[in-house]
Length: 505
Image (cartoon, rainbow, N blue to C red; front, top):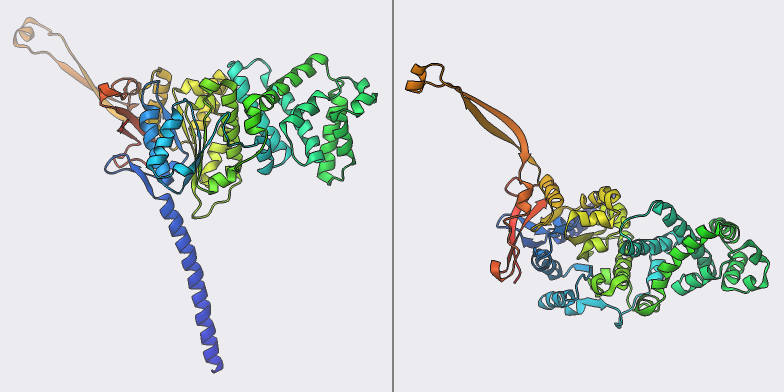
């Protein structure tokens, strides 16, 4: 073979390699695109709801009690998600009967084995703090998990934020952070029983630091072990801050302030370490959350707060927040399953982390949320009443689709009307001038003055969301009406709103 032939052959081989690389990338992109463009269901003959649409911020469903938001739109959307075998998720049950509904959905989809149920007294257990250490593992992430769960627990006892609440929450976070930092250095992981024991055996007075009893306590032994352990420069710095807090600031703190901080922290840890919660989330881990996501499984938390109180809130919010941590660390490829966090009666379970971090970022990790709630004010209350309005609007603004069933309050209706937007309308008017003399009056010669004006008016008045919508049940042939509002690209009718009907059968 001549030198020219060899060069020509080399050029051909190089061209083939380039073609193969480009082709492979094209196929991967194409497959990923097809996965995202799979149709979940159709709104009507012309408008389809795809996986890509679902991942465009998720879906918010609003409707008063009895409007059909769970049994109509919720069930329809749930069946579509489960029916796609490239899906995974976390489902937070709101009512005792929800489990049977979802088991039926999975059975009809041929995916009964893909539904894992965690409930108080059940066989499936997940150690929450162990999982938080596994997905992040740093002191800040573990502390954030504990304080996020505590946020919803405090909400259940007192819906109105007390004056200075931000200060006390920050102080409680510092107490937890310091304890977590020391325990991580000593044991490499953090458990709820260790946290509680460490905090309860900490010195309350500076004079206790000179006593033998403190040196032999769990707190004293942990401080000593952490001090003696070889540490990196960063660990040395962080330990010194924790040590200053434990041995200087805390013992010299005013009694009332210190007791308030400790009471708040121990109140959260008490839930971790007592009753069925301890057995369910503070012992062993039977399945890792990342395996649920990538294995195309769904985890159902069967502990409705309405019937399980603080225990139900704790299990649902804890599992939800851990799943969010997993998802935000997730690296996806063209074949990665999409993931849905489903929350019925969502105002009981939403946290500041949802609005600030998860909802705005989850799309790039093929994640989304589906939130079902009764009204906009219920979200205000969840985020702190009047002060929570901005946070609630910030969170809901990230959702690409809103399904609005019959509403029961004007504030939610006006918000929905504003989402639909306004259009320019022309209004005509006129006036009739009276007759000037008897001749004009006899022959009807009167002067008419016409006028018109243009104004921007709502495309849908608020009343459209509060009356005239069927709410299911036998009296409505099990049909429930709703408006679906889409942000961004309009529907085929050129508007961002459609009226749709869902069947409860």
